[in-house]
Length: 313
Ligand SMILES: NC(=O)c1ccc[n+]([C@@H]2O[C@H](COP(=O)([O-])OP(=O)(O)OC[C@H]3O[C@@H](n4cnc5c(N)ncnc54)[C@H](OP(=O)(O)O)[C@@H]3O)[C@@H](O)[C@H]2O)c1
Image (cartoon, rainbow, N blue to C red; front, side, top):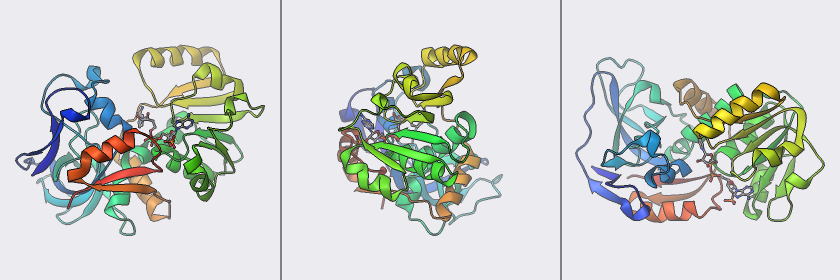
């Protein structure tokens, strides 16, 4: 089968589309025929070697976290899925493996795909959907009427977070690039700010929740536009950031939180339910697996609305 692998950390040139054996399953796993895999910034952070502490030094390594596909075979202990089921899921974040014709996963890593969405749309959901749900579940619970600022509101997590915040009755201010203005309005944002024209950190307005998906708002700057009791969430975990956030939160009501995604089947099921209930899933670019290098090169330049997806025939 085709699978994207690499033998050393480095730039995109370390990746190759290899011909490898179809993986074998055991009694507690399933074999999924992958129809689509989506691109996450985490993918290149990992193959660049930015996360070696977590990913280690054994090679070859695999690429890709998000996938959607069809169950091909189930282990004898699997009772909730059958051959032929359409599913979406998350491969092991640090080991990857979704960018392949087949992936072997545990049952907890998948949920059923709603019949109303395509494989491309389904593959666009797992990481960003789980991230948005975890943020509102654990880090920044919302109440109706709260002022929520989303920096990077038309990217992968942003498109989902903006819609979930609106569903919970929040007032959403979306900070986006110029090509994201129409989309941010379509997704229901109340205020849309073009970051190329306006610096939101210099505004008078203050927010209950600030979500920085663009990694552009350091906490000490964001603090100036936070209400006295409020939450700031960044998506860049590091040991020092986690410790300093923890210490900061002991002494301040302006909370500083960091997303460290813990995938769960419950989050996957919730995002699949939202999708079945009409959540807008934005896939603005699709590429065949043979063009995976072009896909990653274009995605890394920025400017993608929602998600870019790689399809596997
Ligand atoms: N910690 C965790 O567990 C975890 C989990 C998932 C993701 N993440 C991280 O979370 C971040 C967001 O993920 P994602 O999938 O949503 O990425 P994404 O799709 O690349 O979205 C980032 C967004 O930021 C926007 N942006 C770029 N420059 C900006 C600026 N100066 N001001 C405002 N917005 C700007 C981009 O818009 P333009 O491209 O139009 O400029 C884009 O829409 C990534 O760094 C990812 O690695 C972390």
